[in-house]
Length: 559
Image 1 (spheres, rainbow, N blue to C red):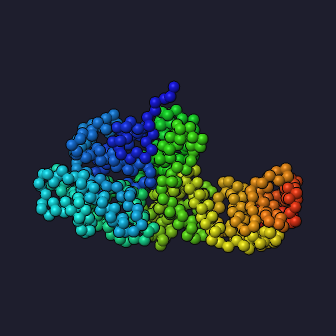
Image 2 (image 1 turned 90 degrees about the vertical axis):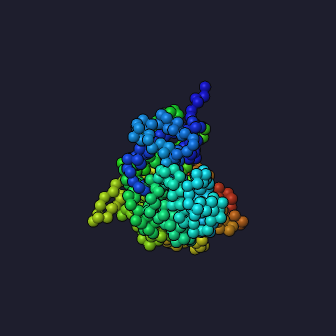
């Protein structure tokens, strides 16, 4: 008999839908209590993408917003409902302005500004009931109507949130709560598409009027991945508090704690694989809390319930832009590529921790990129410490899922490099039996390539197979059955059967053992008669190589 479980909320970001439809909900309502207790004028919470920011902002809106519909039932039985009148008095009390910037990803500033104007117009239209009260000044009423119908001049939109909050305050006689979700998405898009200064000017103008000098504001809550303040977006804000991944305040409200994951897997009766979940999706450290990636956990649970054969996958890689990883790997200097290599192979790095990040200063000072990767979820801070008044962090890759994102990005970059970089010299050296040149060119590629050794021989196998693939008239085959075994790589001239190349790969634990491993590879070729089938196919020349690797070193020997 099938168990009637609550449905898994994949992509559900509306709190009312979450509760009304009976989805499995991980209770984060104590976030409301902490916001009220903090009493900050403006709160910024920075977390990686898909860690529950949008759902939490929706929850705040349904809790605080004064509407004709009573939404108090949504919180019945949840943790915030058990905290008493101290917090209940704020429920349904304030006019709320709620915006999400996550859709502002267009290729040009003109296009993204059109999206912004449309978004502002929709929010004004959501509050048109205040026009019926006739409490607005003629000027405010005129601008209000122009924004609603999209006829306002561009300059009006730069201070539109201030205008809307003033109008709401006049009508409700309660100050306004402003919620802005994913505020930094348009800045990231602008950086990668070449209109960064225009976007900074827009965001700064909107925020200065709405959050800095706004007497109609009760409090504001913003979310994003980064704190961007050096462009003066937040300059001069009083009581402006930032809660990043290294702060303990509110650290358990974004992502799932281990206890929450355990409760979930027990509810769905799938707790036997919790150790694998920890390896793949745990490892984030927000303040003092150990955090799992919530998106990946939900996708995993859904996959298990659907009886998918491979539920442990890198789900998060398809939900978040990996442009910064591509940039680091494609454009990074030798030192930074070496750091990436060490991280993938399990090492820890120590770098200054920059809280005030700009996309532009990543190009000026590459130290900023490590803080960027920390705040966006690609690294984890094991510990933080002061050195001469500078905050440092020891950082590692948090889990198996993120390792796979680095590896896949590296493989994509390597394949692009194969297409763009001439390899004819390598090919000629291989088919002519020039072991010295073969070895020298391999060393050059190894030096310039980001390597990861967790798969060891498989990694080098793919590396060398890629280098030897794609030459006209030749076929490269991997793990081909020959003799009494399988050869690692076979390179075949197809039309006249003039030459065949057999390559056996070994990995040496130490540099001093490279030659020993080459000899071992050559013996294996002979003992398992890897050339038997090639002789039957009448190949006139059969070249046999033993190739041994040790990290960035290699040796080539020919039989």
